[in-house]
Length: 542
Image (cartoon, rainbow, N blue to C red; front, top):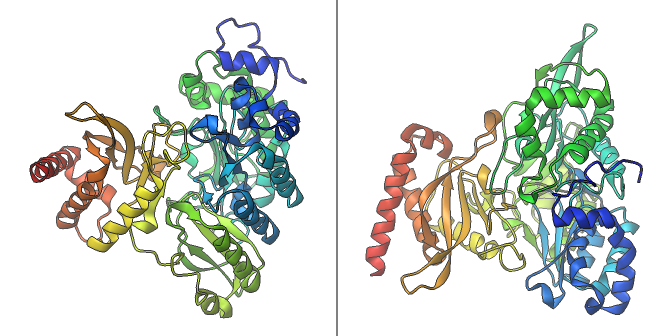
């Protein structure tokens, strides 16, 4: 390797780190052909976790030998051939399950080891990869899903994201990081890439240099969710577009060489940043990069939550991009194939994935918009979803994930559809459901976050239940939602939420958002209302 593993002599590093010293995670690519030829039984159990570096996790139960695969989609931009290739992988191998993730990636299920080489071949043929989609490595780089067509972006970040992404792909100098490492690069002024919850985030900014205002980036370091969430902190630096790769290498080197490797639950960059603080981190960064400009003028205006529904004019004259809702991010293969053909017929074949688990079809001529929207597929998939299903996000849940405690994906869909049938609001309420504390569904930034837990009943049986969190946002630097007391049986959650939101409807001011309502009435008021609802439901059950 081209770098010194300064932690190698530390006797306290955890077992995963000890294993990575012996064999780099990316080496799994060399082993997969053998395992594919000889079947799942040929894979030593101690090698199961190594598949993460290839974007593969074993589904539950692991012993059955089915894999989940994530495919990287930098900035969420897919061309026609890529969309078709992904659709046919889903159709041929993935049992018709095509998921869009909260990091703009694509996720498949039900894959067997024998199928993996052909899937790799199909991905490579269209310029896609699953390398690093999981594991202690740079994950899919999030970006502005309307990069290059965004009338309000400072500049097109597509090539910048591509350059950084390709540098880290299969790069063994940076494939042994302390833990997963998430980056976002966007010049969208509405924070579409969720800067504050990334390990490293480049956000749009201006700086006056030599009497000329230059567009570029500010950077935020140390964001992340899971059981101990942190909001990323800004550094006092301004980065010009041509410096992004160099600065990204420097920050990643700092994480690799100084990140914590003794306890895995403390190994994310957010813990190093929390201990060092912005000033020390900047000082260390400058040791690698040399002088950088100090901060300029922040260009972020607001946070759009990652939502782009409807028809919008592009920066290119005569063209529109159209944002669609994909209920809880799940599609079927034939739907994806149909979308690909529609995107080619009316646009340039591109489809763009969004971190709200939705998608965009860009480059549609204004005169073709109405014809596109008349296509029969745009009934379940729509530009004008009902409010709750249109603002619901869900992780994979117990259906496939070994870490999940509860079922989420289908439950969230049913709850949202039930709420849409029974209550109408004049503002959207964003509801995110997660099956465990790892929070792939990003419940901390939701208006209402639902986190799965297990609850012991009076009969001493363990049942699926949920905790309720309220008041998350990434506006104005961000605020994580806060837990209300109580655990609610999964089967009664829809009733609890309906009553809870009915109170909101009755007591909110006109056009008042859920976040502003909480700020006005306070958490204690919401807790009283939730306790009353729980008591009423208990009496009704008894």
